[in-house]
Image (cartoon, rainbow, N blue to C red; front, top):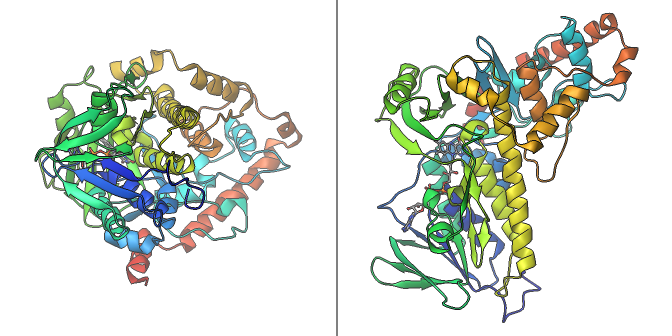
Length: 504
Ligand code: FAD
């Protein structure tokens, strides 16, 4: 773009509508990407409307996102009240049990065969510990430790990754100050009208409450659930996935922190959904995600408040959503990002990650004023497939849950998407993983969920037959003990945060 852009066709004006997490992340990343090209970026947000204000748990890709803007972990963590997140702890999804989905792998492969085949054999014979005990990331998260992974891990047992819990408003503010330093212009105003070109249907301009028109070549819709440009102005439809993901709303509440912050997000299954706990430095974010077909607002709110450990510092906020995605994320000269492009419940903290991949993809496929349909088609297919893969991963948790109650039964009885059914069949038949294109979650993540629910395959790698359970048990025990030793040698989460505070 910078060297090869043809002056006549190059995008000269980018207009970002919305200043939530999506809008400011896009502004920061595009401000950096387009620096020096002469392209002007304007972001319009309405402080009267505000932002959704939730979205505080991330996955490790967020660290690569801000690193690409030259920001360090310490800088972002200090600016955003952040704590370390080494995984998600699932409580009571299988009643009376808990397990961690870490950002990392499990165990050490043996004889060139994936570890989990050996574990499954030994576990079925009652000779192995729960899967998470063979994962450094999971055990650090479970025991409240945190550290930066070694750049050259000495063995597979040392491989893990980490992400952040942060204050969403502070993170957006941090992105904003970076974007404004890169030359992005901010306008605080309410958009009251969107004008389309009568011939092409492309967006020409948005009109502000003052009557001022802001024209653009490329519009980025980050206006939240409403989809002001992509949905309301361009009429792009929405694929509703609520027959697969039954939860359609939430209550969110902040509370005073109690005790030391764990180094993981906790998600606890409840009557008709689940509850999150996200530890920040000086407070906690809490919420309940539930299905309004199976639980009333009053019941969900009461269930949330009964399980918030610290004193709530606000009234719980009611949020409603429809799981699904836009038919296309990019239509004409408008690319939607964030909630405007679709939403999946935050069980695996994927919304911000989908914003990152959307921005990355936009940079890879950045258009000129010709808006070549080949570019738009490729963008849309990648976004659609990626979101469908995340959808399948989230449904997996509900399908495997053994909880009682009408909501959970309905989750188990539904017909699964074919893509998920095929993955589960292969796991059953051979303990193997299908990897489609644009997967956000790798086999280790699928293993974390299968293993956490003790959903063992019926058949495993035939090569495992060469090792008896009697031989396996001590080898597994050595791995488990090595993980436990490393955990006890690793700083606690609190010590880690003190190091961050002291870092230059
Ligand atoms: P918003 O924050 O809604 O921002 C929309 C912007 O558009 C605002 O600035 C608004 O002022 C502006 N706007 C709208 N209309 C107009 C107008 N007419 N004129 C001018 N400006 C306008 N994600 C995660 O990754 N991790 C999580 O843990 C997580 N938890 C969540 C929990 C819940 C219950 C929900 C609902 C979502 C959660 N998310 C999570 C998703 C996350 O909150 C969003 O992906 C993220 O905040 C991005 O939102 P946004 O910027 O798209 O929209």
